[in-house]
Image (tube, rainbow, N blue to C red; front, side):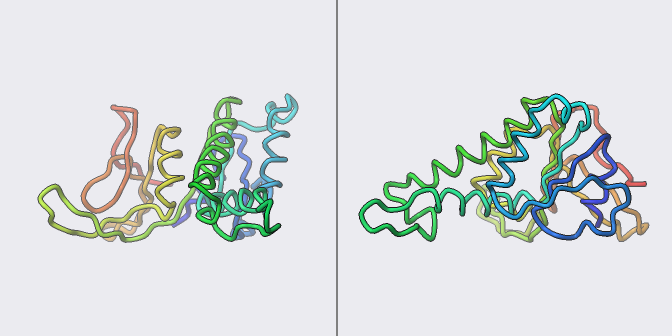
Length: 199
C-alpha cells in the first residue's frame, strides 16, 4: 500500500530500516538496522547538531521489528549470574523484570527521538483481530501488528494513528485519520480531515 514510500516523502527524512524493502525508493536516505545496539548508536548520532540540521523526520520501519530487537537486547544484557545462561525470552528474567526493562528501553529510545525535536513516524503492518463490544458481541477489526506493550508506548507519543488503505470504490489510496468498527485510526487534531487521498 506504500507506507514506506509515503514516509520517504516527508521533509528531510531518515528511514531507519529494521526490515528490507526500501531498494525501490527514490532519493531515500536509509540507515539499515540489524540489532538494537546499532539503533542506540544512531540515537547518539541524532543528538549531534550536524545531524539535527540534516534531518527533520525519523521513520522506524517497522516498529514491530524494533520491539523484537529491543527484547533480544534486554535478554542478552541479563545473563543469569548463577548459571551463566542468557534468557531466551523476557519471561525468563525473574519477577517480571524483563518486561519492565524492555518497556523502559523502548520508551526511552522513542521519547529521545521526539525530545530531540524530530518528527517521528512508526510503521507497522496490519492484521485482522477479533474484538468484543461492551455487550459481548465479537467482530473483526484491522489493527497494527505491533504487540500491545510497545503499542501502548507508541500511542502515548504519536499525534496521529493513520491507516493506509486502497479504496475498492475508486482504486485510490487514502490515509484515514479517524477509526471505525473496521479499522483502528485516530488523531489529536480535531480539524484534520478523516480521509486524505495519497497522491
